[in-house]
Amino acid sequence: MRAKWSGILLGGLALAGLQYPLWFADDGLLGLVRVQREVAAQEQDNAALRERNRRLAAEVEDLREGDEEIERLARSELGMVGPGEKMYLLVEEESDNQARSGPETPADSRD
Image 1 (cartoon, rainbow, N blue to C red):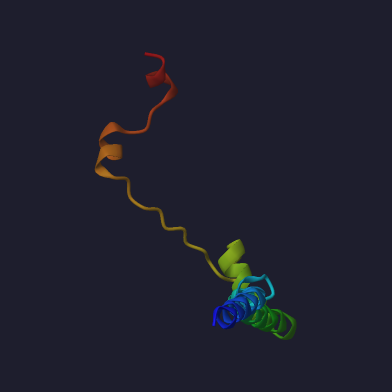
Image 2 (tube, rainbow, N blue to C red):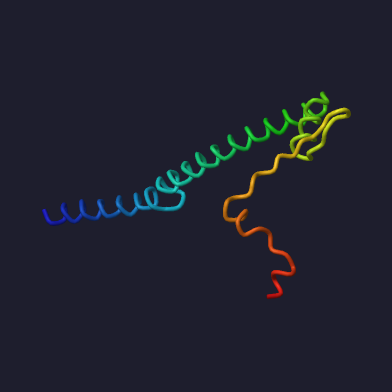
């Protein structure tokens, strides 16, 4: 009877020893779950980059095909105006504190 239980115990320990790498090794099931999470995160990053590339490709195509996009960029980013157009620069009013004190002149700073 004792030999039967020791055999079962020895078999159980051997089975547990063989199962350990399956569950806990880097290439085991826990490693598989970790890699699946990394793959999912990388797929999300790739999707965002694909969308960015799609937008950039569309912008490049617009620049190649039409002058409208070039003109829009020149106006918005470089402040350029077309021939015969007038540009108006709007300046914000001074706040009450700045208006009361007035601008500092070099003579004021000598005191």
